[in-house]
Amino acid sequence: MTVQATPSPSAVYRRLLTYSLRYWPVFLAAISAMALMSATEVSFMALVKPLLDEGFWKKDPHFFRLMPLAVVGLFFVRGVSSFAANYSMVWIARRVVVNLRGELFNRLLLLPVRFFDRQSAGQLISRLTYNVEQVSQAVTQVPTTLVRDSLTTMGMLAYMAWVNWRLAVFCFAVAPLIGLIIQFVARRFRSISRRIQDSVGNVTEAAEEAVTGQRVIKIHNGQEVERRAFQQINERNRWLQLKLTVTQNTSDALIQFIASWAIAAILYFIMQPDQLSAMTPGSFVSFMGAMLSLRSPLKNLSSVNEPLQRGVAAATVIFQLIDETPEPVGGTRALARARGAIEFRDVRFRYADDAPEALRGVSLKIEPGQTVAFVGRSGSGKSTLLSLLPRFYDPQAGEIRLDGHDLRDYPVARLRAQLALVDQQVRLFNATVAENIAYGLDPPPPEAKIVEAARAAYAWDFIEKLPGGLQAPVGHNGVLLSGGQRQRIAIARALLRDAPLLILDEATSALDTESERYIQQALARLVEGRTTLVIAHRLSTVQSADLIVVMQDGQIAESGRHDELLARNGLYAALYRMQFEAA
Ligand code: ADP
Ligand code: MG
Image (cartoon, rainbow, N blue to C red):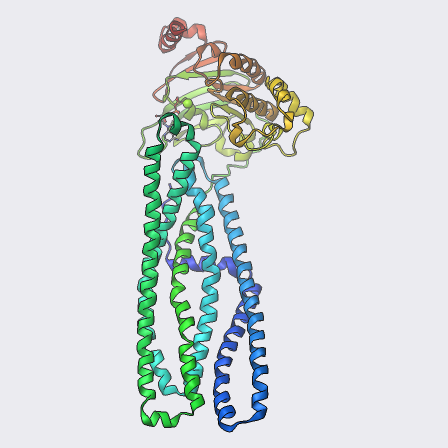
């Protein structure tokens, strides 16, 4: 487990910005457009002064003719620049979303099995969907507001200072106070946003469990329990959202209230007789206009905090995931096609540092082409032992050798290419029968090959009857097929893969006798010429194995051929008698 220090919010935001700064020409264009927008706004205010002073005061007809043109011109520039700025920003935001999502997804594909053991699918999916969207606002709305509204504010303030600097000072005076409030509120936003994102993850998680476990819920009449559990999660999300709104609006109101003091002070001083005489009506009106039009950019600036903190909270979690250590890629030893000699040397393994050992010193030698059966009580470590071969996990002590070399010497991808695995829970993808059988093969094999594999797996007779045959869809996780049919597709998949090593983990345990007979025949074919490791409950299926290994409490209790083990009258003989009597 990798323990990561939480990076500072500003570091997270800087990293996030690199995603949008990658498109810096567009970013630059957007910012220029925004600057133009601010300029039009300040210019508009600046027009008021000559309008009153020159126009009304001096009644200059030439000036009156120019004004309408200037207004239309300004609004035209404003419209074009506003479109350009907004479009460029959304363009960048969508790129950022696509890139982050892509990076996240690619990382998920590379993360070790161990990572998925401690993460729920629902939480991971909600990061990919919800969190990423939260980030998009932070990289667009936030820079937009920061640039456009800061520029407008500064422009207005500069204009006000130019008209009357003494009065403008009041506006500067309240700035630090507002800054303090924003800082305090930011921390609160971030923590609430983080909790909201987790709670959206909980919603996804609960929904996912209810949807995938719907049959269990129905048979146990668990609807009421699920409904209540979900209501709690649902309500918690609502409550957190309200909390965020309260914080947002309280801070907005507070900031505006403080700003009102600056306005009040200015109004008070403007009314002083000597001040009034010093200003022309144009100056006075445009000063007041500029000051009042500060309201909207200031409001935007103070509320930019919320999407910013939401984005930072989301990005923190996203980056944590992107930074997770991927699976090792393995060594560089060449491996075209393994002979299939396997050796376990005093292998010890535990799932977590504080978990008991699942394997406590397993040593075993398997010759190429042998069929080795693993039996023993459930929980004795059979599946764990075999899951070390594709390096789903690595042992903490001891080593596993393939053809005389440690598994870690080979590239992981090459190692896995040597293995075909059929287990109890066949996982089919929502695609056609043919695509499922040929899964992972690049280039896709010709159809004749797929048919051949399907025939050998005794799957052809039912595939033929499906509407569409090989091109029939299997449905989400193969729900349109029966358990036995799914299993046979998995066997066809393993056959087509033609790997020198075969792992069968209770591949037939969930089947009825009829399908099992078919599958036994299919398996007999699959086993030919390969090193096969098979875990089976039914001892009838293991009797013919070259070697039977009896596991107990993470250790090998005894091993040998069927007759030898029976003669020994140990654990295997006991298991055998138990099954024999049951039958
Ligand atoms: P078997 O296949 O012989 O029934 P397993 O190898 O599945 O037994 O399990 C061996 C032990 O490891 C059990 O005590 C089980 O609880 C534990 N175990 C199995 N899988 C995991 C896992 N993913 N995380 C933590 N513990 C596990
Ligand atoms: Mg098992």
